[in-house]
Structures are given as C-alpha cells and as structure tokens.
Length: 274
Ligand code: SAM
Image (cartoon, rainbow, N blue to C red):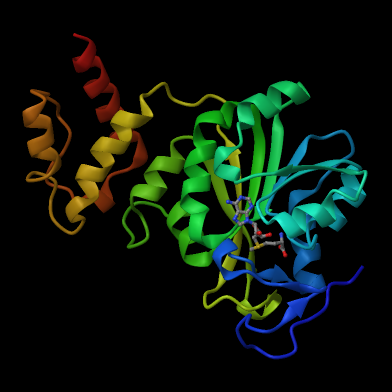
C-alpha cells in the first residue's frame, strides 16, 4: 500500500491521514514518501527470523515494508486507536504502551535473541528513548532511528566542532553511529518544522567498563561552560574528589576525545572504591 502524499504543507489541524487525525502530543508526523521509506528499509535490511521491534509504528509506513521482509514484527504504540488497528494483523505483536515503560531486557529474554530496534521516533521524547535503551545495549544488534537531523549531528559529532557535546560522549562510548538517510520535512504528513535524519547505532562489541552515572556526572560538569577551559569546571570537580591526574585542563570540553573522558570516569570510580 502506497501511503498518501501530503498535498499542502500545513499543520495537522482538521486533516486526517488514512482516517486518522494526527495527534501533536504524540509527536505524530507520518512518513508519506515512498522513495524515502524505501531508502530507510534498505538501510535497516530486515531479514526473516530476526527479532525486530518498532517504536511508534503509527499508520505503518515503515511497519508494512519491514514486516513484508522479516515476516513478524513487534510494535510498541502508545496511541490507543492506532494500536487497535495494528492488533488486527496476525504478523504483528502489538505492545500498547509508553515505550519508556517497556522492559526491553525482558523482551529480549522472552525472544531468546538480541533485538533490532527501529522507529521514526516521537521527537519530543527522542533523547529519553535513547537513554532508556542505553543500559540494554548488550541485548541489541542495532538501532535505526529517525530523529531531528540536528540531534543526529550531535550524536555523531567528533571533538572540536560545535555539535560535539554531552550527547556525543554519552552515546559514543557505547555505540558506533552513522547518519544513513537525510529526510526533508515534506516527506511527512503533517510536515515537522525541522529536517530529519536516520541514524544507525551499533553497540560496540567490547564496550569499556565504566560506571555510566559517573561519566554522566563528569561530562555534565565539563560541558556546563563549554567555551571555557576546563580548569574552573572539571578542575574544581577533580579537586573536590581529591583526584590527581595528568589530564590536560587547559582544553575546552569540546576538544576532549571520548577516550579521555572515559579515563577520568574510571579514575573517579576507582577513587570511590578506595
Ligand atoms: N512510524 C510512523 C511513520 O513513520 O509514519 C509514525 C511515526 S510518528 C513520528 C511517532 C509514533 O510514535 C506515533 O505513531 C505515535 O503515536 C507514537 N508514540 C508517541 N509517543 C509514544 C510513546 N511514548 N510510546 C510509544 N509510541 C509513541
């Protein structure tokens, strides 16, 4: 089934797609461009027998071509009306829930397999979803998510640029990430106000052993004043913890590679145990 195209670039009010009124509070922007959908499905490359889970299937723009390739798909949808439509289909297992309440570790254990997680995410909760999934990265093959392009650029950014920040460090220590498809607003009904992009996130096979809470704390401190040298921010944090290190505090937070932050996180964790 070819999803219908947006005829005029206006808001959602008063317009229905396949008889459904887009709900702004659920971040509903439905994909309508067959070419873009095809690019995304090819990037995902679903195969029969794989355990795919889709977050926010909506009206099925991705669901339909994906399930045609992998034969069965688990979908997580919060909108009661959309979930009711999806439940009519035998090839789908529908979890009607807020994705942030879904226990993905348990899901993976039930399926006795690592999961491939996909979704055109509701943009208002995209970062909470990424952080909900971070602790179960060991149970994941890969993740393909549509997000605001600006967010994807921050996720994949290298040190030294304006996009490199907390999100880059907090995800790059655990995943390999790449931007795989760029998507303009007119590919959705209703069109969002921002450009979008699909990111592929592949958990590192041998992740470093660190305490993510400590990493999060020190990265928040470091980036609290990202244009200043680290002596006054991170330097003070290290002094308070009586940590001595040869870490170069003459740099700005945005110049420090992920590996250097990891080294500090390990040192801080060690100090806590002593
Ligand atoms: N996949 C469809 C597409 O590409 O056309 C819809 C994508 S739309 C951007 C986001 C979808 O996520 C909607 O179907 C919305 O109802 C659903 N959603 C919003 N918040 C959710 C939540 N907390 N948990 C699960 N699904 C949610």
